[in-house]
Image 1 (spheres, rainbow, N blue to C red):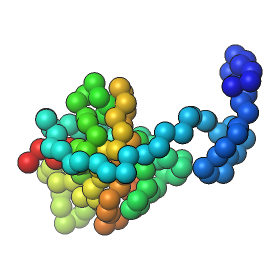
Image 2: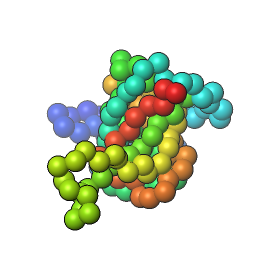
Image 3: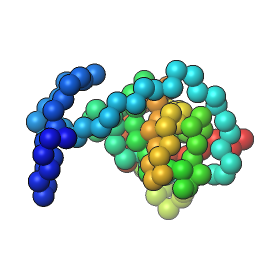
Length: 139
């Protein structure tokens, strides 16, 4: 960081792993873990997909996403996640009945910070969007 103003910081970039656009946020590079041991979640946790690594609103297999569950919630590296979306009512399924969510895919937590976590989407059966639900595997 070479200069800090009230709303903007200026930095000199010496190396980059991806393209950088004006206004992009920067973070130090942290080498990813090459192997992650899967572990069962200690409790049922439910949250939301809040962003993607590259800023897209829709993502798919092998994309990295951010969720609103963190270490203070009990999420840990290696926890498996279901990704789902509420099922919409149709003329064949009246809206007064609770319908099960549509299962979209699975992800694994690759980094857990205090208030959020990063997850790698392992597989999907449909497009995943920011705002979709996530839940831990406990069985």
